[in-house]
Image (cartoon, rainbow, N blue to C red; front, side, top):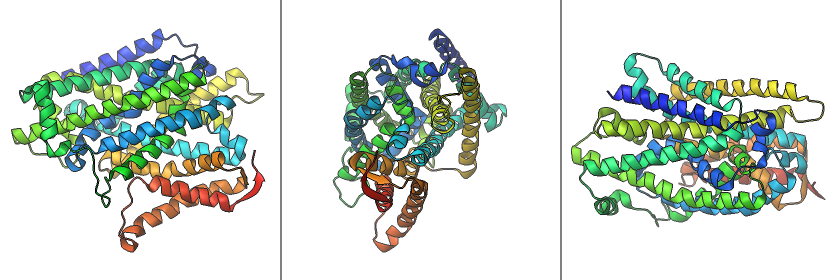
Length: 484
């Protein structure tokens, strides 16, 4: 019964996506694929970005986090909002003034071609690994619930999901993504609401009883004031702020949607509203986590070895009733596809615009379109390769893995953008790729030595350390002569 519900929900949802994308009537040209004609409504963009940023990881990983850290993740979410405000009033004015399609074109304007390529390559690495990690978790959940009982291999599940994403994003690109993301965000939030209601009903809790249960639980703690803890408020707030700046403000995926708005003011309103909406959405995920662990304790259900597996286990075992199988499948599919489709589109855009430069003079439109189609297929294949690596290596809590990876891959990007924005020094362009490679290596060495030498354990502030090392490296290979 559960298998048939999963198949039905997944098939219905993918069909709905194709119909929605077709109804958008995209022109299918590169202007629509890369920029959506710069005419997207800011309210639609803001709502759709919730699903793109949250992904399937949040649906299963954030609730699983509360057992160890309580609801202290909300401290990072408060930092997220500060990061979104910074993006809106520091970075967006720059991007709109330069009328950028790819935000890494700024590095070419400021430093030179090699810096431009360095920024684009680090984005490709960052987005590919992060999006693949998210999609890996979702494919694992769908495989365990639907395809594995039929004897089908894990790669069949991966192939179905990637093929669906490739087909409905191939034509319209970001123009379709802006619209389908809004649909997927709605489906995901509706699904989470249904699951929260269902868990509360299984424990015979009213709305007020649900709130009281969460507040009374030791896992309901939101703030940590212990300076020595990795969950200390100020530490988490600052980490959240800078993680947002790098994973949104200097990330082509998220900025590409903002740059489809008709004006800077519209994009700024979109970014601030998006930052506000992220708070209650993540609070809902954390509340779900407290309810799930409380339910498992009352029922005497043995906990899985990883928090990521708690919700899928409870749904798959029937402990929450068959009523939640359909919304859970819709929710995780919506969250996963809204994150992966925009990542695939932004990676295609960055390779085409930053590396191959299909919009340069002399590159005719037919050749540019054909190149884009080939790159889009190659990106889908690269997703499959990265998922294979995660599958073979195994992992802990995926959301923790993503943030730690971001410290190494986004750190050089943060250092480059900070140096360009806050200094007028001219960098030796040829040295930039080497600085960007050496900084994460030094960062990794310090991360391993810190517990022994200073009795300090790095958390997500590895991002700031990496950025600082890159900044210092750029400073050493620059002159006081004003940059471009």
